[in-house]
Length: 317
Length: 317
Image (tube, rainbow over all chains, first blue to last red; front, side, top):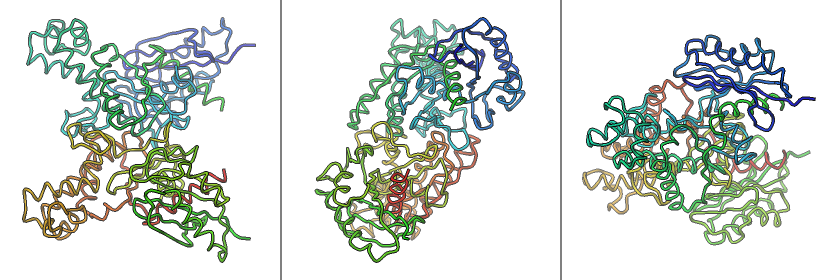
């Protein structure tokens, strides 16, 4: 008899990635395609059908589908109610995918499914209280509390990136000023990198990028790896701001562990070390218990594994 | 046959108040005594025994005891693990009170029990997602998420007052800088009142207090009620900071409702109106749904009713 498995779909800004995931969290088969920014639902259906067409050779039976996507999600309806960069041609993703696949479908926020994946298959599996923070162009978050995901009354919770940590800070795309995202994300590093080369045009940030307008967080990280002090200063500033965010998470949620994920971790120790140092210093100043701070153990498949884990959980209980 | 009721105990910094509460949230009988700051457990036992000695005349049977106290609580052990101003002569409050009363006992943080009281008997009873913020000398908070209290892995969650909202802000007694409590609490209003009269010695804040050192939040509130512009400016600043805290609560928790409680609400509309205005402006800037913001409907009995409600809930399920 074959084991029950799930398809996990990770709807990213540029790529929609999917995989068949077994009950131990292994990704048995993968597929991906460019995200259709004006027909998000169609793109999801395409990867699901692709995997279903190929699962016949496998020792598992796909019994459900999990989908993680950016934005506010009404998980009761399986619909994305607000998405920054993506149009869903069929707003009830769940109904559309269920109709085409014949399988039960679960839709949730990308950081939520990642948090659930960590809880199910990560290094702290089984914990009841976990915080996951995704550090990319923006900052996302997912929280497991009392063993359940924090979704909020209308699916708009866990927007840690838009927690204000300095009311006089830079304007954020969300409409507020001084959000954590404006201090500690990839876009913040990019902005601070541009500002820094105005003061220090000899920084290798500028050499790598060519022009100030072309500077990305990646250029800042590359310059920092080559000991460019201006770049390292930018990353340390961003890291220290992240440390404030982590302290706020400790004071608000007191999770067993905080897990970090996302591309900005590639900026390396100047960033992550500064975050950890500030977080530990703040925790010690408050005489709080030391809190475990980890980097995701699920790697690039975090979104696929998390979406599958949530589907396996929510369609069997 | 008599109905099941609970004793609720509210351990405050100066008074320990208790009452017998029935299943509809009515307080049938009350008692109180000064809090014994070096023998907290003994003081709790005294009020419980006082009420039990008098309950014979009543139509209800006291079946359990709930206790709300400041600090970090290990609710599994029924013990206060950290308390700012109070020494518990017997650290396992639950075991001590159970031994003396013969009743099952539940111990939790004072803001947690207040949140549970709101959920059970307040104006939004039955909601699954609620935030309660207590505005006193300090700022406390309790959160109901997915129908359960947020306690955290070690009972140290829901410390919203120590969420940093400005890293360059004043030092906080907790060891951090720029905590919400340093901008929006009674002690913040007191500090800002003292600072304000240095600039404006003709403010009636000073006239009411006599000397700058004697200024309390109450003097600032009184001056504001008499249209002292310096006092009103202090309260508006504090209120606007509270608005930032409310926006952070919306972004992190997305509760159905945020309920405010505590003595600082007596500062009136200069404070509360500024908080509401800033919160609404931030919510609108983000295009978030309008969020309900209420003041507690349980009044001064909030702590007693909440502790009793939690005991009735946790000892019957």
